[in-house]
Length: 294
Ligand code: CAA
Image 1 (cartoon, rainbow, N blue to C red):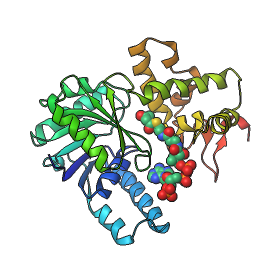
Image 2 (cartoon, protein in one colour):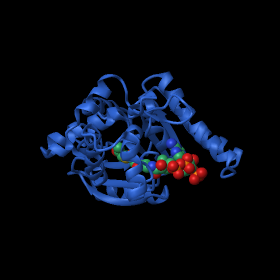
Image 3 (cartoon, helix red, strand yellow):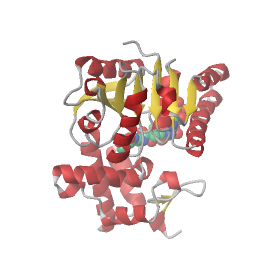
């Protein structure tokens, strides 16, 4: 099927980026959020990213305007009715995702495809909540979706070959590097990356190094673009707890369990960059490690 119109459910950290790259690729995009405030915030981020690209001379103002014009923000599922593909990027909570798929399944065209951008939940569990499991796949993008080259394409138990092929074709059209991943918890990247971030938090708890030194260590010693604690803040500490809970239950290994520090921070409402505080305080010009005492 040739994609012309894509629905994106969720306009948060991942959803706004997915909506932007789809619109940049020339597709009509309908992006749905639960309230006007969230929707405005997400579209504001797209506008800001496009503005930066114009400032840098990488995009003409007219093209940036055209990208924005291709994105229709909405609060109604009904506006996604004639999409060819719907990608969900809502909170990492299975009950909420199932509720959403049930609502969408009734309104979106029967021959449209569905994809979840879940980081850790089973694609098959979500597919089973719809009447179109053969048209259901996992499409796992990475943050920031506008920049990160990878797309994991996940075949679930009942995904059809055409749905999986659509995932690879979409990745190619968006200029992504695609990999096939099995429908296990965390797929390929999070299966390896999540225990690494959790281990960095445990290393900090054990006094192995300060927040800054752990991050600098991995950046300067292993050429990572971000240290693991900056990355945890970037992913979102609430999301990291949600993923680690799913993976700890699935794998039964201590390495996937959320460390106490992480749970305490999330309980306190410190979700990382998105709330302005995590392992770093983001209220000033530059992030300041919270263990620095400044
Ligand atoms: N949205 C859009 N574009 C962005 C962006 C954002 N949030 N952040 C940075 N960019 C763009 C910049 O505009 C810049 O573009 P140009 O090259 O066209 O000028 C480019 O990315 C590089 O940005 P900067 O120069 O500002 O900064 P940087 O070189 O430090 O790169 C980074 C920023 C790309 C985020 C880099 O630090 C990086 O790759 N970090 C690691 C990110 C990562 O590991 N992501 C995966 C997280 S795990 C995940 O997502 C899976 C999950 O399920 C949890």
